[in-house]
Length: 287
Image 1 (cartoon, one colour):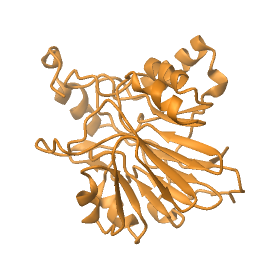
Image 2 (cartoon, rainbow, N blue to C red):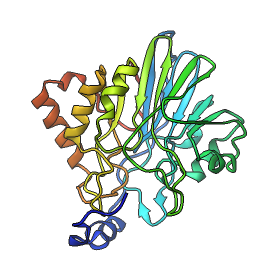
Image 3 (tube, rainbow, N blue to C red):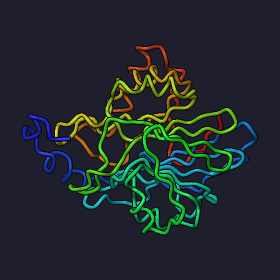
């Protein structure tokens, strides 16, 4: 994914990075009150950014966990919803790709406890070194059964390199199925035509979709904007849209508060306001 032709017209360092260093972190961590999840229910807790805890009656699944306060030199601007030691026992971990804001080594080392981890093809060695001994690599459209869960890797329009030469690493999203219910974590992606096919292949109920980081410093189309997320939601034919990938790290030019404002406006325009669930970090929601 090469930079766009206009990437030199603005200066990310002076416009975003330096001001972020002097921005006070918002949010506060509180001890979460995880409810008892009954059969047929799904409990979702947004930790922040693209990190979620998904709980069923039988399993606790952690997706793209990151508790770090810095992405190398990029400051986290909103606290995670709760302290990592308040997590319940984690049965399975899913990582959508190897980018630093999704595969956080410090967090994964703290979580690793002999539970299986699922990653795209080419990412397995990275997480094995962090203490995960049961590593499942999936290619696009592959499915694995993990106890009571079915986990499928879906395509995305993004890239998977952790470093410049890592052209072999895969990326995507995950559909998690359990007891007739389903959650789709989109991972990172620009809008692309594949959402309709994902919705045709999987009966998606809850869609966790990224809405931020769309004004890329390198002028590349690698993240959806809020309006595109609404279109993707409709093409998925999902029931509930949960926005993510906004508010924690300023990774592009748009202000932190803009993605949610634009999402709400687009949802009103398309008549789906009642289908959008805006979550608060650290507050479990049972669906």
